[in-house]
Length: 325
Image (cartoon, rainbow, N blue to C red; front, side, top):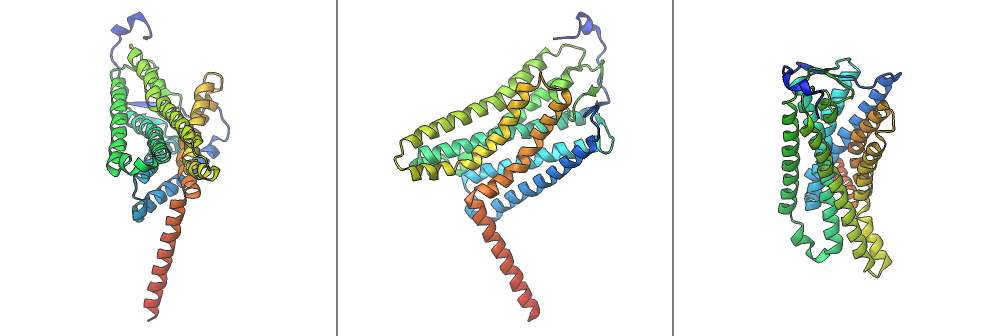
């Protein structure tokens, strides 16, 4: 796909910067950015708290919570890569982003978004084995296995996105440097090129299938298998108890995938600004809600929080008594 037959003769142009237009024609849009800032603060506090609880409580250092820790880490990095830059561009009127910074920005935004989907795969696998093969769980889901799985996910995502980003550097941007988005969107960037970007289009269609739709398919299949395994259990109380352990993960999956599916399904029919708002909310809401859901719905974390708060209260009382003496 190229702009014209004569593009081969066009001088290669690598601009010093791109311009992120953000939302165009929306009145009082700054209030929306203030809202994004509030969401970001809650996200940072929540994910930092979850990571801290898992680190401090040795009872939570299980394979499942390795994946939960990594989910919180990916959410924290992803939010920190996206929101502060969006606020700097929009609230402080700094729409220009240097060429290399744009691609770095793109890499981290997409990497953390993809890792969230793959983390949900790891958690789905953990629940499937725990419910369907409880006697073999300790053997099949070990610390080493979960570390290896998470590391392989990071390696896969980093390698694929690095290739995708590097391939953008072969493009010549002689038409425009204005990206009609709030971040360096891969498709919108390669569409600005005036030489052949067919390979980038192929990659742009391939990556969502590999790091978004295949994880969703695996999660759906794993819960189908969980449903089949639970259908063989006679006691209703046991079924409910087993299903209750999945509620937090199912909530995370729904919060992540449903907005993405709606955005993809309606992207051609909705206004560009509406699409951008949907995309921005899809990027910032799951990182904010994930720790809240785990704190509210996961019994182990609630118990751990109570235990850590008791220890802190006791230490304060001990210090006060020592000072009074």
